[in-house]
Image 1 (cartoon, rainbow, N blue to C red):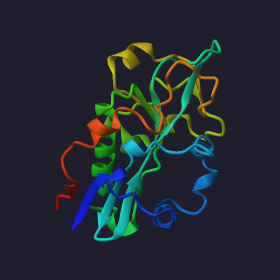
Image 2: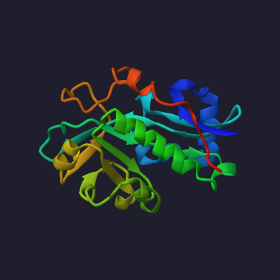
Image 3: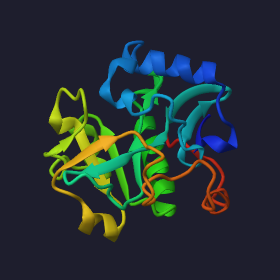
Image 4: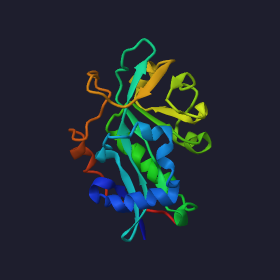
Amino acid sequence: MVSIRPTWRAAPPPSLLSDLLDQSLGTDRTRKPSYRLREAVPPIDEFAVSGWAGDQLIASTQFWPIELRCDRGGFIDLRVLLFGPLAVHPAYQACGLGFQTTNRALALAERAKVDLVILVGEPGYYERFGFSNVVTQAWHLAGLDRQDKLMARAITAKAKHALPICAEIRKPSLRNKVGTIVPRATSIAPAIRQEEPARRLRG
C-alpha cells in the first residue's frame, strides 16, 4: 500500500532521502543551477511531502525560501517559494505518484497563502499544474541552460498583479525585510496539520 503524506508527519531519515534523490535524479543533480539556491538554506518543513510504500521512501518533494529582486534593485513584496526537487523511485514512475505528490505539496502552499511558486523543470510536465514560462522569459537565474525551464505559478491575486517583467532569482538574505521569505516555524503550521490523514495512491 502506497501513501502520500506531509513530511512533518514522519520525516524521512536524511540517508533515505539522499538515496531516493540519487536513484531518481542522479548523483550529478547538485550541479544544476537550482541547487545553488538551496545551498546552506534549510527547506520549509511545513510544505514537504513524501510517498511511502510500507517503510520504503518512494517519493519526495520540498519547498525552499527564495527572493525575487526586480530590475530596479528592490525586492519583490511577495512570499516566494522554490519547488523541488521532485523525486520518484524508478520502480514507481509510471503510476502517477509524481503527479499526486506535486498536487499535494502545492495544495499545502496554497492553503498557507504563499503568493508565488517557482521551479526549474520540463514545461511539458509542469504546465498541467498551472506553471508557465511566459512571465519568466526575462527573469534571470545564474547558470540556467534553458530559459523555458524556468517556470512560475502565481497563487494569490496579489502575485498575479505584481509579477515583474524582469527579475533576478536569489537565495534569501538577511537584508530582505519585505516578507518574501516564509520562515521554517510559522503560525500556518497548526492549520496545515489539521488536514485529513495521509492519502492513499489510487491504483
